[in-house]
Image (cartoon, rainbow, N blue to C red):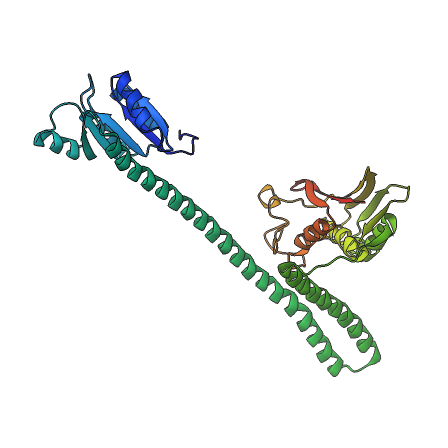
Length: 377
């Protein structure tokens, strides 16, 4: 267990209480937390519980003396790098000094202790400890940033692969249509091919709009054009825009919208885009013949909109990053849904620009999802 105290810990070990009190008084202005032990055994217990910046050890103690304690510390992975200053009232002959340094001491001070000398020596080790802590924190932050950049780079590469796939398919289909018209230049073939090409052109236009929205998100250039509008009209517009996705999969759309008029100040196009995106996602990720629920209620000075489905749901490990740019939710081992993975990231930004919030209220694989949007009136 590591001490929660942010100050460096200084361990004082002496079998006499008065000596501990005197040392504590000397260290009182160092900006450290003092740990005191009256035996080697007590000191080892403290070393197991706390990180220590400096240990001041009395040499002559009954039982385990300072030299033995230092040897135990050097044998411990947790305490082996703790600087040790020995304090002794006995003679500091060459042999004792050699034993002390062999046990890992960085210094040897004779009692009575000269306060200024002890404080200046201790201050060096406290400063070194703080620098190591700072370097460690910077290293951790750098590792975290590296991980974030690696994840962003991976998602960017995935996005480019998806974009290439999304662009290639309609372009190849339009090329095949043109080739067919050249081989069979009759009216029936031309009418069929034009209809298909019109669909693919709309799809390409949607992809271009998504790419432009990526740039707007990145540059913070999405601006709202707010006006006083009726929520029921906005929801009807969003439903109409998503209807072809819902009908194509034979879903049932169930609406539960408050009957009383709900007026709010919002950007009609952007808020409709939010609801439309949620409805379209629900349609895409719900097996054919499923149910989609759209509900809206006024709650005091805000409106709460929910979009629920009976779809594939979102795996627990994905739920924390579904609003990240380029995040893709795979419902199977192969990617079967169209899209660039920016829809929910854009939705989140649009909702926040309205001063609101969006959250995944509930989701589980095979049980569908519920998204909740709350915006102020």
